Amino acid sequence: MTQRLIGLGVQSDKTAGEYAAIAQLAEQHGFDVLSVFGDLMYQPPIFPLLVAAQHTSRIALGPACLNPYTMHPAEVAGQIAALDIASGGRAYLGLARGTWLDQVGVPQARPLRRLRETVDVVNLLLGQDPAGYQGRELSIAPGTALRYTPHRPRVPLLIGTWGQRTAELAAAVADDVKVGGSANPAMGKTMRAWLDAAAAAAGRDPAEVGLTLGAVTVVDEDGAAARALARTEVAMYLAVVADLDPTVEIDPELLARVQAHVGRGEHAEAGALISDDLLDLFAFSGTPSQIADQAEAVFAAG
Image (cartoon, rainbow, N blue to C red; front, side):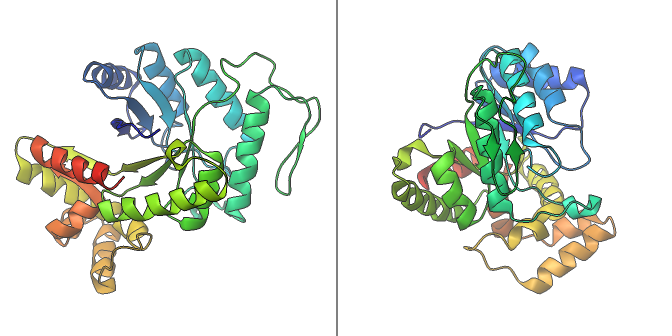
């Protein structure tokens, strides 16, 4: 997917009525994609996505992202098949290794292998292939199949990552890659280069593999107020993503101070430590024209 697509990502912490209203507004205002985050301890994204499916007719819908550890691939396949049926073929599947799973005692061993085998199993089940599957992490007995007919034998696949090795996997099996938490054009250029090289090595046209950057977005006619709120929001995840961006060097002492404030629930104080330049790497924020300029810079990066 090389065309310019604009998506709206929402957290799964709202009511059914709010999801319906957001989905309708997103479609009315020309968004191409509505994603729901799959963060730990929030509502499972399938709930808001099914609500959105019933209140829209055009916009693509999907979780960004499910992880292959807390949900078995058979359940992943079932949920995405259900969403594809409910939306009339508008579902996409987002997969990533997941974050914060140590808080619930879930180890994340061999993430590349787990992701690859999850993709294999989901494709096998959606394609109604009765051959079964025997991987090193996962297995499906021969004859095991969904007991209903999926709307499509395959849905578009997005893999979320900041890393080169996962990008190389995605270039071979996915339709899109998402760098979650980044608004940095330099990171976009770096990821695009990784994907192009890996896709060519896998025998694919690099143009077949799209690239998405997504981050906290706060927009208001009062640009200063929007950016102040964005700082507070970014502070909560800056320590997680800052070390993932190979194009950025951030003072470790600054990160430690931000994290200490966040740990004490002092989000405004944490946000106040984030400079304008740093904010623009990890969030889209400001007036509508400022947001548009940031988006154009990302598109220009590929």
